[in-house]
Length: 265
Image 1 (cartoon, rainbow, N blue to C red):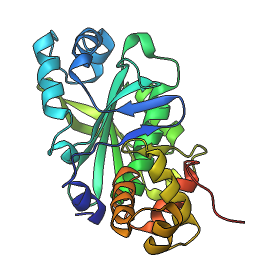
Image 2 (tube, rainbow, N blue to C red):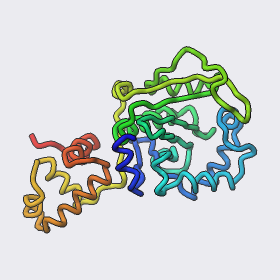
Image 3 (cartoon, helix red, strand yellow):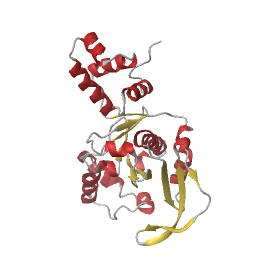
Image 4 (cartoon, rainbow, N blue to C red):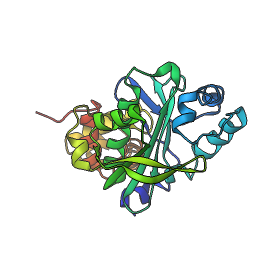
């Protein structure tokens, strides 16, 4: 299993991903009405396996199963939103426990043709490779789902020309499928670099991060800020969890990428 996934599995802090417009946040109970309405759409019914007819009880069960909790890391699932607002769709990574994952996504009818699926897929794949050390992300779609295939190609998936005959099961019937895969190098070639964070850093944590960027030790930071060394350690631990990062150096790198700090001249 990928090492980063093992570390993340003990955390209940769910990452929020954003590229400045799209915000992928955890599902909440407030999303149930929007999910119920969105999943009654005939296009979603045609290309996905969501229950039909789709009822509020189905949305409730989905949020309960895939919302924040200790099992979230087995299938990381986000609500697709604009600016962190109302549910516009869902995207998830179905981890195989061996360094790979399968991605699934859908966008509600009123939110299509705005680039949300492309932005969300790009964010999710970059996070999977950078934060979970995934080696490959796989995409599948029933033959004929041109919208999904176009999104996958736009993000950098290698969509194979060969049709996989009877590779998927759709509502009890075996159907032909398209297949694509993405490696970390493919994600690195895409133009947008997303940001992610567990939750916002406090003002004090930003100060500590700034000092980490200068290479100061915990003791030096404590003297500079007039706090105890143990308090500095607690702030550093919190910063590592929120970004997320595995070391002080990685925290600085992520902080620079997100515009939270800068390296000294």
